[in-house]
Image (tube, rainbow, N blue to C red; front, top):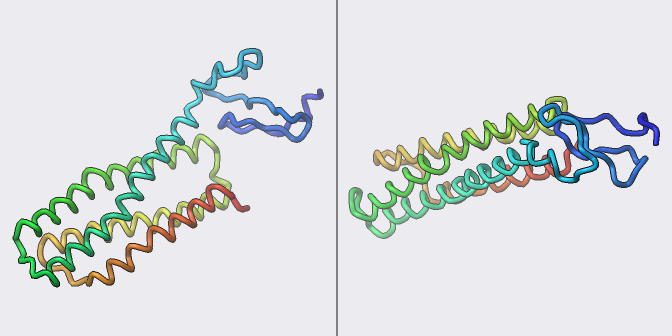
Length: 193
């Protein structure tokens, strides 16, 4: 085999080849040293990229779960106050406010921060900055972040009793993260040029 038959390698340590071999080879990685072809699996545990990717997926999943659930809580809160005659300050109102605050502060906001930090770190380690799909994904994640901020403002309005948004509007807003997630997943998996 000629050395020039292999494709250029990336800093992320992914398997690469140009068709010269069906097996491919492990690309050299600056933080784990040269590949150890004679000992499969040795050195792979030191590669942070797959571990960071796994943590990024977990953080993103927690954040998206909150983005799906919080607008639904708002629907129940608004419609419970309006239709069922639940007075402001009642036990049910206080329970909704507590659940909304806890979901936003204890789960969604830390998951948002972890998603951003890990995602940017993955982009840097993988040297993805020249990829157009990454910039499109970042634009969509910025929209999700703006939606997160809007939900935080709406939670404060519900807590203060100044909410002007209907349950139907919250139902429609509940579809925003679904559409954005679909587009983000397509970008990440397909990686269009």
